[in-house]
Length: 252
Image (cartoon, rainbow, N blue to C red; front, side):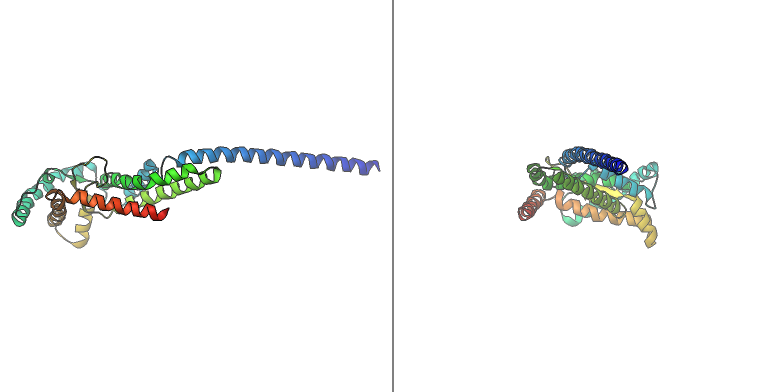
């Protein structure tokens, strides 16, 4: 009887210890979950995208891309593009029957990372318009679960934007860069991604000067559409604003 009673006592004390340990673990998990939930909620309210992280993802992808050139070599291509612009702009002006203002002086030869940095601004303006009502809706939600869900959305969107900038940075040859949704209207500029232009010229077996000239002619024509027709930029901006408003209305 004493043996049975002693064993039962040990079992009772063991059960008490297990119950106490479970209580402590549960309390610790609750505290940790609450802390992580509040932290997730704070981070998620910073916006849909961690732009610093997106930049890092794009930069890492671009560093691994074949055909990368030293900064000095890219800068050395500047005079070649200046000469091309001097050659094609008078031809365009004669063909179009009016001068091409401003943008001729606003061209730059950039590496892939430079293009990604410029385009990141456009993405940031666009997503900034989308995320305001979404973040406002998030602020009306409470609890750790909502915070974790928002944090997951932020992580996935950041990964997607970083991947997209990194991918496009290895494909774009040239661009007339104009931020339609910028708070203050800034002049557009021509960007030539010489690393990609050289790579495509080599793949196609086209002389580099001819490839550069074709890209410059193509992008300068786009610039003319905006620079010589002042109504076009606000018109497209208004149309884009309307599309974003429709998207948000349907999302709600």
